[in-house]
Length: 336
Image (tube, rainbow, N blue to C red; front, side, top):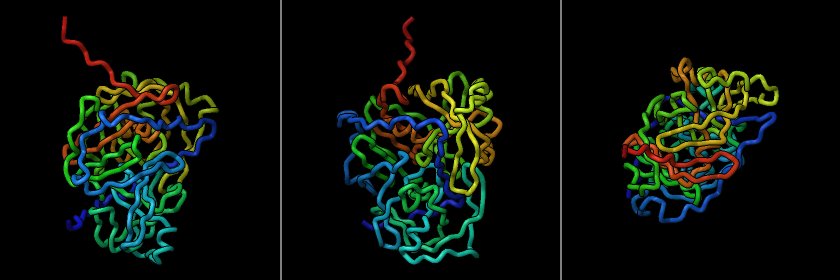
C-alpha cells in the first residue's frame, strides 16, 4: 500500500514540562484492562501500529523514521499542531538549522522564533509527512525523545493509545466501534487541530483542551477565580515553575481541585497547575474558565481514542486508588 502524505498545519508545537517545587506528580496507573473491554480493532485497519512507552515524565512515545533513518523516539503530542525535531536528531542526520527560515513557536509560556531544518520525509508506517521545514526546539522540552509527532501527522483520522498493552496506533479514517464500557464525548477541533471537550471542574463549566504532550493539567486564572480556589495559591508549598517549548519559565501553583467531569466520567484526586499562561490568551479563552488536560489524567486511563474525523473523544476508564482516579458516573434515572 502506498504511503499517504499528510499536509502540515501552519501553527507550531505545544508541549509542557513541569518543574515541581514541592509536589510530586500522581502515580501513573499500569492497568490490565482485559481484552473484552477494548475496541474490536483489526490490525489491517491501522495505518500505523507500534509498541509505545512512557517517557520519564509519563508522556506517550512512538518510533518514527526521518529521511528513511530510524526509528527515533517521538512524543505523540495532541497539543502540537505541527511536528518538530530536536538538536540531537538534527546533528545525527547532519541537518543544518536555518537562521533565515525561522518560524514563530507559540507555546504554553510564551512565543519566540526558532530555526528550522529541512527534512525530506517524516514516516510512521504508511503515514508520511512530505518534504518541509520543521521547527527545531531545545532538548529541555523533550525529556528522552528526539522529536514531537504532532497533529499534522494524525489529524485526519484516529489516534488510539492503549496504555494497558503499551501500544499506539493511527488510523487513516474514523475510529472503530467500541463497547459500552467506553465513554464517548464530542470534541471540537479548534486552535489549529486541538481537541476541546466540554467539561466541569466542580460546578464550573470549562473548555478542556486534550494534550498528551503535557505532563500536568493546567488551569487559567478565570478557572481559579470561578472555582474559588484563590486561597490555596497563597500556600508557599504550592509554588512551582512551568517550562514549555519556548525559553520562558512561568511561575505557577499546584492546587488540589474539585473533581473534573467530562461526559459521564468523573476524575477525582487531581491537581491543577494555575498560572498566567500565554497560551490561554492565544486560544482566546483567557477570560473564560479553561483547562489543559494533561497526562496526569489521560495516563491513568486503560485506553483513549481521539477521532479527528468524527470529532469525538473516547475513554476507557480505570480506578487508580489514592492518586488521580477516574470512574463512570451513573446516568440519571428516568423512572419517577
